[in-house]
Length: 435
Image (cartoon, rainbow, N blue to C red):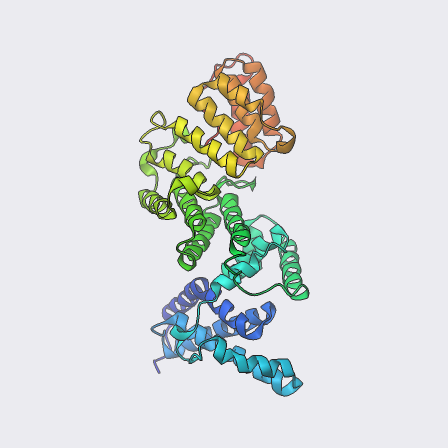
């Protein structure tokens, strides 16, 4: 046993416990949940294990494998809890279930976590079960798979903490009351269930990449969390094309996230971004993941979106962007995953490939009613009108866009464009929103 460390060493231990918490939380919770079969109980056990680490590691020193130590400690506590339930309540089902643990886990030695199966995939599919409301799926995934606290989730989504807490309560209650299975779907069910998982991860990423409200345009913390979840899923399902496609898409989009705003946090359009500052390592990872996903002839929606992002990543400049290929990708995407947003993006790409008049004509075919409240539709119209010199009409569309966004940075952007279109103002350079 080592000497009691001083304040600096104690701070280092706390930092290592925090690091282990974020890295290992999902695996430890998933392993414990297999034993106790109750989310709240699993979280309690895991919190106890981390508290035990904070108590012991300053005295004994950091273990060589912090994650293994935590997993062992949590599983021991979980097994103790199950045996206590058996003794106190005499539940026949608890006795029978405890007897199956060894067989189900390959008779693992609790002191050797390497023999314990990785149940994170079960946990991800449980959190993202289509039977749960979408907002509850997001909150539960960030809580159990991401290891974020309720406070952190509320801060991330700019929502009141009681609101997030209630979503978590509802999700856990639904899982318990409806007996939603803690399992990975069978191969035959997997295609139908996987999109719900991918949608949750991408929703988290999108909220970070283009925050819907608040003062920041980009929430790097949420982007990073979604990337971590995507990499975890790709590790667990390495040969699933759409998993690789989603990871590629997020890597490629995140590679330019730092250039989407200037030093003051204001919006910088794709045309004006300093491409030398794009994260080249992220681009390499994204292109490699897209290649791993397989041929585009059988591409799913995330692969196809990643291919669009790859067109931007490969272009040395705005003028070198292959907009015709991007239009082709959007047409293919519309065929397999039609939506008004896809049609909007396709129309913008047409305008950049064939000119603003063609873009306006394509926008006329977009379903306005389905995009009611979506600021990018009037924003795109305004830009094409401005390019055509129709500044009065452009101003009307910029006013609509300004009234439809709650993000302070986007509001500032539209206000500046609106002012430039007012009588007496000189036309300003710039391009269609595509940051």
